[in-house]
Image 1 (spheres, rainbow, N blue to C red):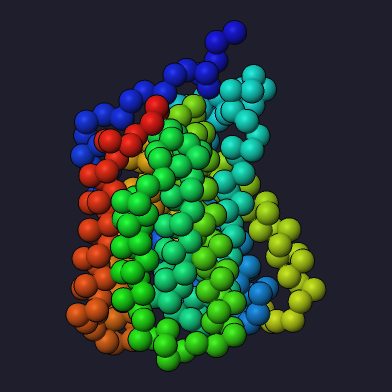
Image 2: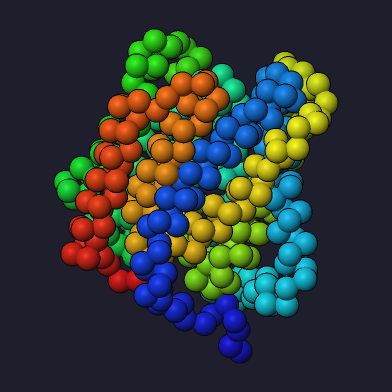
Length: 329
């Protein structure tokens, strides 16, 4: 029996190929905005891990509610959701490919726990380093939908540009604020970035069968379920909850998450995980610098502009290398 889930994936259109990188930059900027929003929500909720995870529960919950409502009123997406279940039954989609939401849940939890203390720019340093390293490995192993893309010195150099960019943009603050807590929080952000690259690869695989919308819905279902368990466990730890804040925009993290997860699931099959991650890093660097300037009433400065330029160079290097190294889609 032929199902919707077993249909062969279509090649990206010319328009999608042209617009992919600009859209990836927008997705990266959305990650920086979401980090700031979720960090402030956690601070407003209280203190300790339970506030950070509580912010993630609210963020994922609002995103899941939006996705569920829109899916309910869309016949096409209801059919795609049925195709996801059918794909699992007929093993055209493997259960392990559906766990990308766990990485998303960890990322959002890390935002809530760390950003209020170390700031969105410092958070971006470790996050993007994890994304860059993990993206190289994921592409080399052929884990993503674009197929095998060999690990090489030039591709490593392209990723290094991204890491150098965020270090340049925030290096002075890192030198001034080194502490045990900062290092622990940086490690959490690094792991969240590494998981994000794996999440993009898994989502790209699922999206080939059921489209980016239902892939995003699956991410939020899996992630929110995991976060509820984590929040219950966090109640055993020290910390406090002060109640829900009244500032409306603190609850937009989930909506922003829907946007960038959907974009990543749609675009990862166009240029591969490395280019997607580098483009998102460029968006994060620019977004983080602007947010820091706005929130701290400062300015981006020469280092910020130089950092943004380095990320763009990294994206161009990766794009220039891809046609020679692209594996079977």
